[in-house]
Length: 509
Image (cartoon, rainbow, N blue to C red):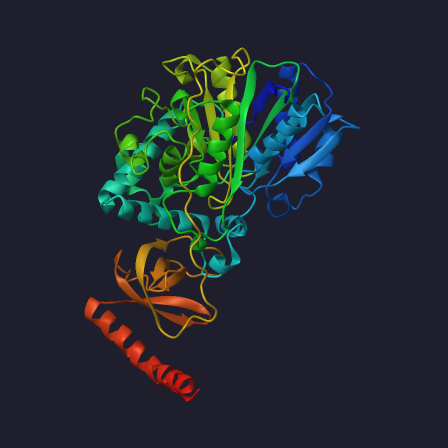
């Protein structure tokens, strides 16, 4: 039997823009967690930092932090799973303690991102995107915007209704962030302010995207002491390329990770009292609420609009303010979610931040990359029995989307397809001109591709486009139904001589 894994201490630094160095932030969080746990030494240190080499020019930080903390002799390792890195470091430490190999482990995660320009930071973050999509200038906001548009189209949401859903998430999370002394944004916003904000990647505006942030988080895991138990862990990956996925409105990696975590904890989704869900983009909270089993597929948007994910609702989501308001130092966020959950479960927050009902089960979900390296963690009070009589009824699972057929190389002749989603990216990575028009297109042959579009004449969702190769990249040119029929007919006539030659060869045999 695995050993119980307990949280004996937890700490956060304030999130936002700071002059402190990354190592200073990591040490500050680590010292806070060790102090609460009543420990001066641990068996091992697990550090989560996504990309300090490019953000700050620092490396070998696990050893540097161990030196700084006086943990000479303790094992020190660094874990990286893109923007879920903090949760990935926690997972590694969890299994080390659960196996009985280690007894007390320090987990620290952080990032310092504000020392570079926004465009440079966007480029670094985009490096986790598949190279085949990064060539188009696709950034995280651009792909998130395409997913938001695809979700709206799949569930028959008009543009105004989609913006209202996104706004409901942003307004809720900023209201909670206003109560959080560790949050980067401590000011509520109105729906009108959300709608009037500067566009980033349509339909996403400034208040739909988590900010660039500095910060660190830390926890101490122990097999001997602690007020909260890590009851379930799940971790799954998906295709790095969004264009290899059949569906754009759900993340396979969340669904599979959630099923693993629920099974380990023997907890049903309906038993979760609150959740910290990765909302780097407001649409991701909506999708996450469905993938985690809180609401049926296609109903997360309605729950957000109706306030069912607010602190008074049936399933409070992001009572901390989420990544959206607390901030998103990419290496730290997955662990910061766990710290916030720990504080709520143990009552270590101001009365204004508490939930109306005393929580007994918390869940955190962290996304790595564009939904392709996701982790789910379930936390309960240490006093809760390992196996609750009668509580575990059925295993949770949702069907996984199959991979789309790969794009042929080179594509056969002229290609037509249907536009699944499109966006105007107003802050593209370095090397691309703003605004950058992008579309996600499903070809007649069934494969998906990104394509550049004319920024002044965006294709309509569901419309037929002709894909032309320009410099090795597709450009989508919208055509009407009659024009599309003519293009397909012309392409068939062009292939006819080749077909006749093949039949002649077969008959001559």
